[in-house]
Length: 178
Image 1 (spheres, rainbow, N blue to C red):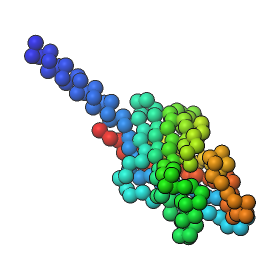
Image 2 (image 1 turned 180 degrees about the horizontal axis):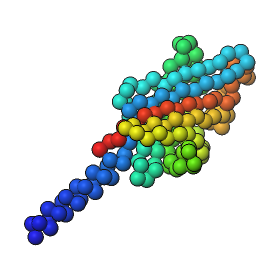
Image 3 (image 1 turned 120 degrees about the horizontal axis):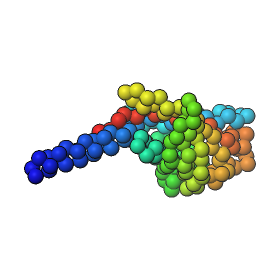
Image 4 (image 1 turned 45 degrees about the vertical axis):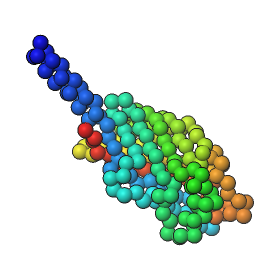
């Protein structure tokens, strides 16, 4: 009887360890965007401390989640950053951009299908990228955000300053969490 209990505990422990070992957390995550407009280009990068976890990937289920603070984006021009947070993104009201989906393989690349939310508007998205495995799991890709689809208002006077389509690039290094 004692031997059976010990076997049960060992099997249960191994099962729990193998399940938890399939969860990867972002150790380094760089999110940037670029907006090309006739009068000026706008570029920003999300600056998050190394080790801050804003993304997770469950290898067993394929689930992928991101939660990026809007206030983490930094611009070369401080006034541009202020306008971005106060006038366009309303960062106090909508503090995060999120993605919740499932990752699947498509040839040499991966596809994440799920819902992307920014500025309080949720849209179904299919995002393509590359997943590189090793000691770390690296996910990189890019996608376009159309401002009017997310109710991000651009005054008509500034249409030549701010593009209506914004390219977002993602580079994340995940470490396996045990």
